[in-house]
Amino acid sequence: MRVQVLPIVIFFSTVISILYYLGFIQWLILKIGWIMQMSMNTTPTESLVAAGNIFVGQVESPLLIRPYIADLTRSELHSIMTSGFATIAGSVLGAYISFGVPAAHLLTASVMSAPAALAVSKLFWPETETPKISTKFNIKLDKSEATNIIEAACLGAFTSIALVANIAVNLIAFLALLAFLNAVLSWLGNMFNEPGLSFEE
Image (cartoon, rainbow, N blue to C red; front, top):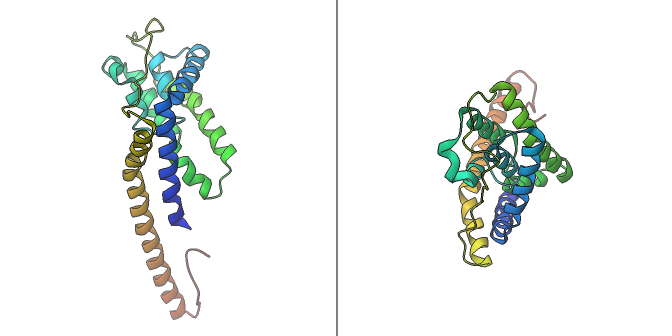
């Protein structure tokens, strides 16, 4: 059952890559980012990254504003890191759904976490510098490197390899550790006439 999560991660990563190739993800990120920018008075860069974190992971979302990273203020960098930790990547969304978490709750939490992360980060580290990137800049999001939809699907599957490997290795390590601790606890329980002791009961 626990291993079934791995194909789901690959599938979601592939779907997001296809949507990115079609331009739907960029369009949605720009719209959500604009709404947050206008309603919360944040800069375009941090708003776009916060919006991007709803769909892509913490590593990929800053790449949306790659040409502007060198011009970010410390407060903007803090906002970008905070929003990255506040949301879950779209590829991992399927993993949580397979564990039985309602999809509606996950999507709602991810959408609400983006503006909440901006608010909390600005409370913790307010903007004291003058941002170089203002609303005057017409920020463009990069297009997919894929040349067709099949290549986009392949790239999505390929980029999920590292995530799937991390999940698989952690599953093996922690399940083996849990089995070992259960065996030790059961052995100790048998010594004191308490059979069947384990961390899972």
